[in-house]
Length: 96
Image (cartoon, rainbow, N blue to C red; front, side, top):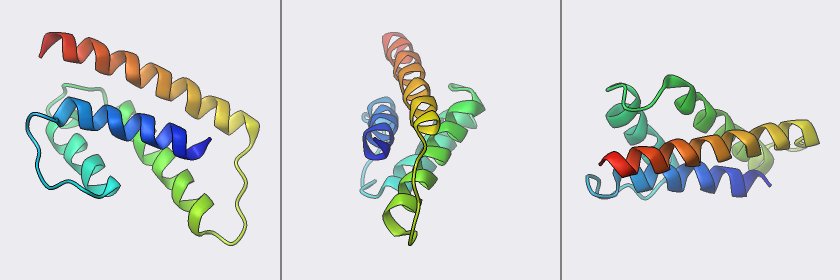
């Protein structure tokens, strides 16, 4: 599940920035760009930056930690956040 939520969030960031970015091949660069260009300018609330950072940390933990399990509750929370974020991005793109 963690990869799906991360991809959903990162692709959402990518969609918002697609007409303005170049060379952002790593997830952390896409996240940093989104934070700089959209969160710091108040186009998106800070909570979405936190959502992305948290799901990226979960993904990193599951990939690189010796033993890390994501609980069902955490997975559901990330799923709900991803759905919320996608809806906010859709609304944002309608105004762009």
